[in-house]
Image 1 (cartoon, rainbow, N blue to C red):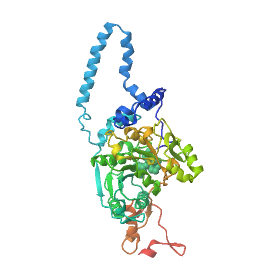
Image 2 (image 1 turned 30 degrees about the vertical axis):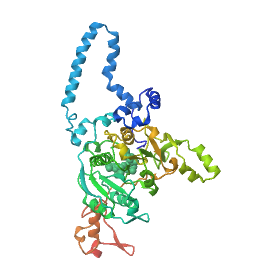
Image 3 (image 1 turned 90 degrees about the horizontal axis):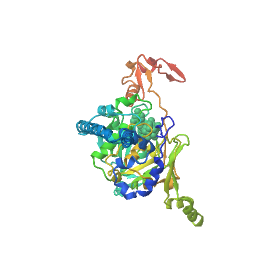
Image 4 (image 1 turned 90 degrees about the vertical axis):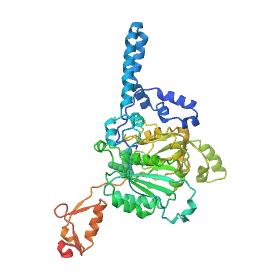
Length: 457
Ligand code: UGA
Ligand code: MN
């Protein structure tokens, strides 16, 4: 996400952009769709192009020297090159990665290289161990938006991925989000919790809503916790991607919906029809309070429709514009400078890209994810009346530490509600009580505080 507090990747001078643009003209769209992302991506991004060069430094460095040298020198370099190549092949054959033995986060962490998105993208394939805490495929809702559930049976399912983490705002955020999702037919809610264990309170909560859901335990690898900024929600989304892959889901639409955003119900009808990748503006992002695609070819057609016989809103809904660029105050070399909530992906399309990935790279998650699905600008489907509407808001909830309230435990029995109340607040991670710590709880009547024993003993 697009926010000024991330450090941009260092951009080095490169004229690759121009070449890329030219290349883009030549490559046919359909061909691109089936092209493996690893081949496709490295052509486009200036940073990646530079990294690519860096990676090949030994070769590139040798080439001119070989040209300049005589046959004697060539005789010296050739055996050396053969030995080096042999070592590389040997290493690749016996590294655990090649054999797919890398099964947990720890190994991943060892290989992690900061500021190297492409590396993460290609070599650290999704292979986290998946921990499902609870799930339900049953939709217990009878009616949604005034229609019975059966009226929606033929619609594609939206897989709504919500990363979440324990803090005192977690349960309120999820409750509010659930009450939006309750209105949305054909949805599977993937709630991935950044927590080592399964939160049983959350199981109960999610079950109660009656929305089909999967509750995953997907903690951030330890190493990243202390990094600033930390890759928030990445382990969670990776786990959800892994879940989708394990279930061989090739129908439906994937959407990454954080737990603190605000979603307009119209968003869901818009993204449900996604053929490949749809995009739309997100409100309240960074310096411009908005981030989203720039769409062209709208105005001329609109003018015809609008001035002749239609309302502007209706005219906009009829026209098919093209995404030509992006408006976002934090570009930092990103090819796709969009927010996580600003796009949706069709699962049939995504399944064509076995290297789909979201690296642990703060600020670049969206960009690198979209590159891992070989996206091309011509393929983007603008939504929300050609990106003129805001259907999702990047609202943020103020985070505060859960307080400890001083209240003698001997009073927290069945004599009043307070014992049960604080027990549930503790379970939700909202507040806890202590005999000795924290500000003394004030219990009052008629505007006057009295000793706890006055009401509770
Ligand atoms: C912005 C974007 O909207 C996110 O999609 C993006 O992941 C994030 O920046 C980032 O790149 O850091 P922002 O509001 O700044 O979001 O971040 P949060 O809302 O705090 O976190 C994003 C998601 O990750 C939330 O759903 C949150 O519950 C979850 N999260 C956050 C974790 O799972 N673990 C954490 O330690 C922090
Ligand atoms: Mn947020």
